[in-house]
Every structure is written in structure tokens, then in C-alpha cells.
Image (cartoon, rainbow, N blue to C red; front, side, top):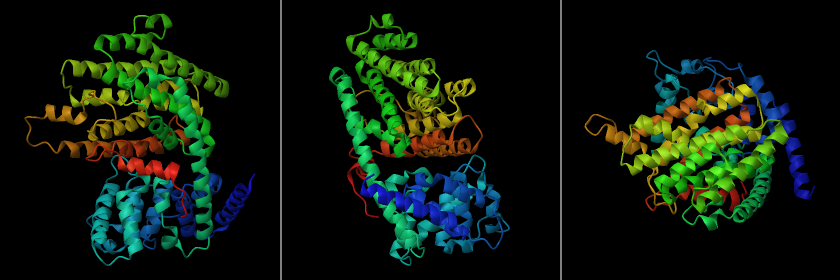
Length: 513
């Protein structure tokens, strides 16, 4: 190890010691939260698990418990997969069941309550109330002139980027640990480790990206399919976000390959092929026989060859490393994706606007999320058996909710993606057509945001439930949902400024914290 790695390892050991020796429950929680927000928690998984196990069940709705403490406790435990009832917030409500008005002055408590509210599940009215109450009073506080500048910035960040629904690595450099928790002796040590770690990980990501560019260039699809997108950096961002841990380097490389083909095949259906060619291509992918591609145009043959090679390569890797051959499931997933693309192509060719429900049901598949997460499931190799594979093949809620979030955000970002001249249709178009004679319907965009919110609640519930998926797979699903607004957050100039900032923070900028 070189000098930096030795120092890095020494600081990790010191933080492990401090975390294991802390007696104050609140300080333990704050330290865990800080490690997570600075994206260095992966070094301390065992220690954090011990802390959260000790904390689980120790706090209740006692009147002596501070709102900030209780909400932080609630959020950290739910994020880690522990079920904590929303009843613990009852002591902060009045006789009418509303949050007490005097809490409107507790800025730290409101920030923690707002953060906690984003881990709500279906039917948890208390967290819906908490979200509204905290958002209202934090927004009022932000507009006032009474807050200290550091606290005002923290309030703005909380409102705009709640931790659970955003990418920690994107916001880590803005996390002002000193001003928020500067009285703790471990702050400077944690900041120094975060700085070293961030720059080391950035170097690793840069090396991986170079390999991805090399692989994409050697694959040759960008030369053969001139109409298709040529965006290996964007495709790699999905993988780096789903699997940010440095130890998952090889998994990121492999996952980027099917992601790239989702984009390329999407462009074939949207831009490149006639309806007859697309039907033949879909049939060929479903049959998955070399002889079935003879009638295809040359560019489709080239694409199918790349698809076959990558699917075989990933299947061999999973078989060798985990003892399970996923080729049947992966081929079926590609066939399903092409069928969904073909349905959309037929709708557009016939100028048919489908029912919004039919559009979204098909859009879950055409989003590519079920296919990508199926590949990720096998690459992780955790809990592989007949029952879990059967479950994955049927797009369970953990997968479909993530897909709904992507599909709806994609449709909200109405700007065309780079180089795309095709047409996918959109949920909003279908919804407005379906309700064109109903003047009482809510704003289509508000309706879509409500659907996205509901999908997040279902996703939160799936992450807390006992199902066939490992914590790593659940985290990856959440991370994909988290990056979606960045990927489709077009501004009026049809560019993606927040995504560009994310790329800079991941790959280009050193940090000092």
C-alpha cells in the first residue's frame, strides 16, 4: 500500500474504535448519519449495524424525547431495513391529531421530521402530515431573515434534496459537518477520511470509465448504427449510481453493457426501423436462433450479434461465479423488452393514443428497468434459487415501482433526448386524451407527481418487507429511482444541468470538505 492508502486505513481503524466506544445514543446516531451522508459508511457496515441494533426499540414516544432525536432514529432505522411504527410521533400531536404548533419553531426537529417523512409507506397518514407540516414551516423559515446563514443553507438543502430520495455522493461535498456538528471531537477525523476516500474513489471511477469507452469503441455499434445514441458516459452513470461501492467495480463494468443495448435497441424501434423490420427483429429476439436473423437488415443483424455475445458472456460469468445459468431468463427479458417497444411502435404508426393504464403497464417493461435489474440480480448472485428467479421473471413490486418512477419522470422530461427524432408517446398525452371532456380533472403534471409519490411509498414498503431480495439489490433499486430525476430533468434549453453537475462531482472534481 502507498502512503495515502496507509493513512486511509489508519483513519478507518480510528473511526471504528470511536464508533464502538461512544456512549451517547444521539451522538452515535449523528455519527452514523454523517458517515452515510459523506459516503464513507461502506467502510463501517458492521459497526453501524451494531449501533442500529442497539438503538432499535430503545426510543419511544416519551414526552422527554426530542423531535430531532426521534425523527433521526426513525429515519436511520427505516433506511437500514428495520420497521419502526409511525406511532412514535403521536406525542408530538395535539388532541385533534395534528402536529403541535409549537414545533414550528424547532428548525432542527422539522428538518429531521421532513427527512423522515420521505420513508413513508402506503397508508401512513402520519408521515403525510409530517411532510406537509415540516415543509410548510421550513419554507416559511427559509424566507425569514432570522436564521443563521449556515442553518438557512441546511434548510434549503433539506427541502430541495431530502436524503432518502437523492444521491448521497452528489450532495456529500455540500454537507457542512463542522457547522452542524462541530462540537464533536471526531468531526475533523471524519472529514479528513471523507476527503481522502472521495478522491480515491473518483480515481477508480475514472479508470473504469476509460475501460467502458474502450469496450464501446471495440464493440463497433456506434460506427454501424449512426442513428443511435453514442453515450457510454451516460450508460455508465446508471451502473455507478446503482452500485457505488468500490468493491463492485467488475459488476459496474458488466452492468453497463446491457444498459447500453437498451438504449441502442430503443433507438432502433424509435428511429431506425420500419414496422415490418421491427416485427421481424422482435420475432428473432424471442426465438433467439441465429437462423432467425437471416431476413433482417444488416444493422439489425449486427445488433443481434452484439446482444447474443453480451448475453452469453454475462450468463457464463454468473454460472462460473454463482453456479446458476441465467441465460433463459435474460433472453426472455430481452424478448419482453422488444415486444413492449413494438407495441409502442404500433401505437405510434396507427396514431392510436392508448388508455393511460395500458400505456403505463407497457411502459414499465419498455423503461428497461426490469431487464436491467434482472441482470443486476444475477450478477450480484445473492439468494439465487428457483423461487427467487421465478419471482424476478414476473416483475415484482420492487422492480415495477422503480420502473414506474423512471417511466413517469421520462415522460415529464418532454424534451427529446440527444439525437432522437422518434416518438415514444407519453403518459401525460394518454391521460389528457382520456379525460379531454372532463374539466374537473387535476393538472396532468400534478397527477403524475402523485403517481410518482405513490410509487415511492410502495418502493419503501418493499425495501422493508421480507422478500426474495438482498439488501444490496434493494439499495441498487433505490439508487436507480434516485438518479431518475437527474437523467430526465431537462431545462428549457433541453439540457441536463443537474446531471452535468453530478458528473463533475463524481469524475472531475477533487473535494476538500
